[in-house]
Length: 130
Image (cartoon, rainbow, N blue to C red; front, side, top):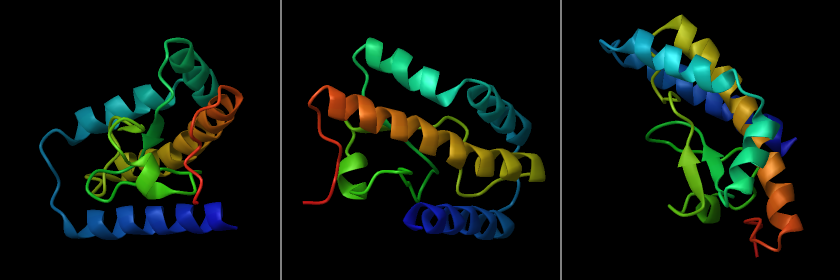
């Protein structure tokens, strides 16, 4: 239930902020970058990153960052613990980008669930509240 609520809040914030913000000139490029990132399998991408020693979570958004599926957001948002999913934004500049951002939340959720398991399996912090 908490995951569903986080998703709804993130999508509502994205759409609300996006409605108030003017379109940017490179909107098509941002949407295309996000579409390319979403073309990968999130579980496979997380495994591939971990094989290179990268156990960071994916954060979502721009100014209002969220790390889907991770309980302790403060822990997960530390610079060494996460990196932003390219192309996500708090202010989508088109309907295409708004739809892609909504799909990106699910992508980041699946990626982070895989990272959580990989971290636990390797004795790393899973950013659970203390």
